[in-house]
Image 1: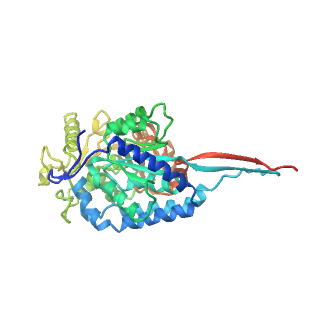
Image 2: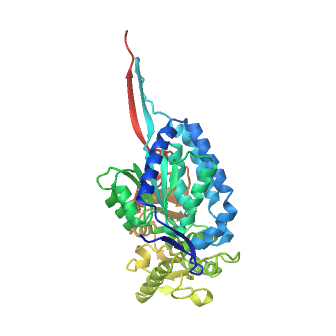
Length: 463
């Protein structure tokens, strides 16, 4: 069986190499997890939450080491300081609502002589299959609440971010999380499929491609394993005539190009009211030209390489296909010295004269390219925003809250933003529609996804 290897996008060096877990190691991990979970579930919620908070503190203490390590693995510039602001926000919020979210549900109509309630029981063993683009944030969305809810967790991290899984294990061990309750496993795709097909896992959370999500469903078919799937996206933004244009430009440029566009809820297409279109495009393009593409370990770099050369190749192909169909590219790659054909270093690109016959406007890009179209009114914008097989987030830029809500109700998406984008609020359910997936993470609803109802109907003796 081939080793699992992480190759740095910076210069092609090998960052980490690990042997896949043996069959015996996987079986031992399952046995340890099941045994640990039984005892863990007996602990009070407050005790479980306290232990997870200790894990969070242990992880935060590693930040200085983790930031350059992330740059080496997947290319995010060190100047942005890692992921732990959002990491801490999410863990703290879920800890704060855990007691209330996990308490028994009482019927609204009490009956004398009966004790009736619905308890929230842990599912058992949760498998988290995490992606490389936000390797800490995406994983903790499930790991922290799953443990608070009384589950055991197995983590299978992406090969591009092999060291992240080990950091999770390091922090769990430092926090004194019971042995076997959380385990990081190095697994191949084939081993992961076999594990799911075995029925040994009670719930799987996967963040990745649509194809990957379908493979997860096929592997678990017939096992009744529950799933949380966050898959592809093509998130739109709509800039209305009454928008604060400088504010919208600043935030949408960041929303399109942060992390080299490799964001689950990054902005991939923008629709602008025709009365503001020219000014928006000029401002957007001018700000985009200010990015500095280069080595992510350099503090001056604001745009690092894509995680793998093949990802950059896809974006280059989308750009060329759009130009061949009549699109105009407003950014000259020659203005970015590090941009090089056949490498993961790719300049940001802004395309106009685009339409939905072009791949770049309908197919997921997951890179530093965005297409901008003019629209005549709200109805046209809604039609175009919904012309997608995906639905994770959509953002509306306007001065009118009521109009934003009215438009948002018509858009087929999991989250509607007004005057912001590319953000995850832990108080709200993180979810998607259509090919973006199923299930939800965070908020009280996230706890519902990681527990099952168990009803108690207790009749007192009349004697």
